Amino acid sequence: MPIKFYNPTSAGRRAGSVLDYKAVLTKTEPEKSLTVGKRRAHGRNHHGVITAKHRGGGEKRLYRFIDFKRQKDGVDATVKAIEYDPNRSVHIALIQYTDGEKAYILAPNGIKVGQVIVSGPDAPPESATRCR
Image (cartoon, rainbow, N blue to C red; front, side, top):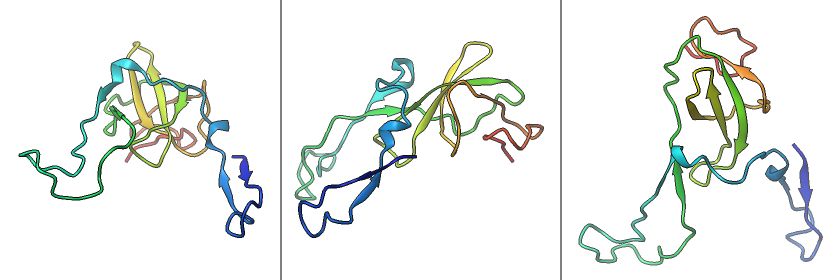
């Protein structure tokens, strides 16, 4: 993954560097059928009263449904895209099974668009998403 270096505009920025995640991403808009609007409390309780100060604002987020269980054992899936997820610190991969169903999974390190993956106890170890 490429590294982005900051220009030394101040003493704290002189040695600053971060991973350039945009070089990895292949799609900017999420799959509409796998998202839902996320409600935020903004520091308010169930009566609407502010109970935690300084928690307002923020960017609107869509929650992406992640298939954590991967119960389609032995069914091949093709990686369609690597996407950014604002709700977690890991990228997510949009996969499409051979029967046409789409799902999001947490993207393992080294996964690429077009790669065929399979889950289950009989999955080969080189498949990045072996379960159990």
